[in-house]
Length: 240
Ligand code: NDP
Image (cartoon, rainbow, N blue to C red):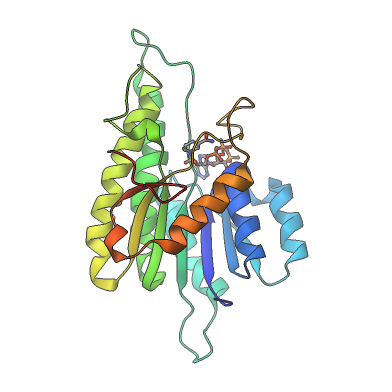
């Protein structure tokens, strides 16, 4: 689809940046949202290479005020479609996420949980709510979750602030799927695999390019029956 509009959060590095690259390569128009556009060197270089097709806008997903500012600014970037109707988003990728490593039982503090919940759980939920009027009917929303948010797969203590916030995000995915079903909007939770980014670390199994290619295939193949489901990059279900 040549004139699709996609928005990616946390787009300045890691999986977010790779989503932007692959969506542009597929011919989409992309809004890349990140906390500090002035410092997003890779994104700004890409914007220069794709004039008019990549817009870089500020967004702190943990800050509802910043979400509303993005929602106000977005119509200017989306413009109008061929029929003169306001442009809409076809795809929202809630990718931004945070992991506070080094947590251990006996030394847990509220601060990491608060930050992780605001970013990983409330971020996708409230941003999707703020942008819902700008999503076209039949749009897709992809929430970057993690197997570490799966209660069924948890076999070790892990990183509680991350585990809990991704489990909460999974519930947000299901609720968003219900809330947006009447507009035909499909909402999925995605597990990318273990990927070599700052979060995943150098020892991870996958390159971002491979993970993102799989995730975009899964999103493209998702139907109404998949809305509210938790899927991996091959499209297989992940246990909640
Ligand atoms: P990185 O740590 O490499 O990148 C995280 C991105 O999120 C950065 O762009 C960062 O921006 C952004 N971000 C963090 N907090 C905020 C915020 N409050 N507002 C806006 N942007 C924010 O992580 P990955 O690329 O590896 O992960 C992307 C997603 O995939 C995450 O949701 C993660 O949980 C998930 N995931 C990753 C896995 C992996 O193995 N890598 C495995 C499973 C899931 P900034 O530069 O400003 O900090």
